Image 1 (cartoon, rainbow, N blue to C red):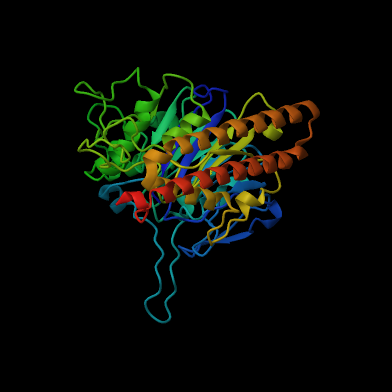
Image 2 (cartoon, rainbow, N blue to C red; image 1 turned 90 degrees about the vertical axis):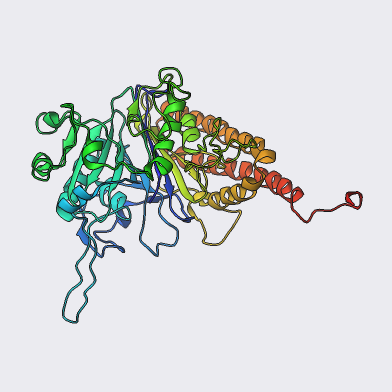
Amino acid sequence: MSCTTVLVGKKASNDNSTMIARTDDGFFDEKKLVVVDPKKQRKKYKSVISHLEIELPDDPLRYTACPSVSGKHGIWAATGINEANVGMTATETITSNPRVLAADPLVEYKKAKKRGEKDVPGGIGEEDLVVLVLPYIRSAREGALRLGSLLEKYGTYETNGIAFNDENEVWWLESIGGHHWMARRLPDDMVAIIPNQFAMDGFDLDDAFGKQEANLCSADLREFIEENHLDLNTDGKFNPRYVFGSRTDQDHIYNTPRAWFMGRYLTPDSHVWDGENAEFTPQSDNIPWCLVPDRKVTAEDVHYMLAGHYQGTDYDPYTSQETGKRGIYRSIGINRTGVTSICQIRSDVPDAVKGVEWICFGSTAFGGMLPMFANVSRVPDYLSKVTMDVSTENYYWGIRLIGALADPNYSSTVQMIDRYQEAIATRGRQIVLEYTKKVAENGDASVLEEANQKLADMAKEETTKTLNNVLREASIHMKNGFNRADH
């Protein structure tokens, strides 16, 4: 599934929190936010796509998830935070190359072709990962290790990148072929920017096979690289992107421009992104996996990047100027996004309120990023009772409607969208601050469901108001409008 990921280390954020964020770009998938009670966590998991059955541990934690509403093609839980204040987002579909895929083929489901033969299950994939990992980990590092062990045992039918965070650390794991993997801890003062490509541009193999302080990998990765002649590095440094990743013309249209836009936003002063002397262009293959931002990064900054459509550049599809470059690159905040989340684990607050999950449904360019406390037993109906049919009673459908109406009328509705997004963020932060203080003073975490209901009610109010305004503006610009004075 084509997505975009942003990771923020605790020293890079404004409030000493860690953040992992991703747009879940399916094909207009209906999504919801729910809480999975340990009693309802499956003991045996079966994948719809790969028909693989896996026995699960009997000590799951409670966790939030953003599954597909229909469930027809599996759970696709996407993202969440568990009760140990560990976040996970899965997955960022990444690229590979024929050398890797030939040496370690993907593990795909094979249906029996003849009577008497048995189906051969495939490996694990995006459909499965959150359910298989998030309920059983108590740190970001444990997340990487558990997922790595599952990849080695069962394999995967696709190449993916997966993020984990806790109060102190952010870990990023990328699968390699069918059974191999590598994971790296994000430096605390850095922000990672990841489109749909193999992302890591540095890795310490000595650490991975030694102390494992910031690097982890499958047990035979060194032998796998050497035996299959995968290392293309010539300068003595190990760049995993050269070994396991891609370098195609399509990357320069679909992937690298997104990294360029985000890097340009994060480091406008310390790097040159435009002009004849640019260090990096939209088609550069060497845009860093992670950067030290020029200023501290907020949840609003993450939302802005993940809503990106190259605003402020010649590539913006909404610009009124004929630049000759308008819309030539794949935007970040695209039309078919199902859900975008920011899993934020905060410091210097009580454990009960450390986990805040920011949620935006539909196209991130038009939706508000709403914070929700994760340490709860249920989620308000406005976010959890999403229907398959269009309804203004759902946050999901409200944003989808706003986006569809505002997109063709962008110039006349953009200020409405800006006010909407700012209102959701401002009023949302006010409620989060209010209830964080309440829990800090009296230690009663039961008030968090009350807080989430207030947040949902606020989001419904602001979404309905914006939908009214955008609908009126879109109606004014209908092609069949006519007045007696028009002739």
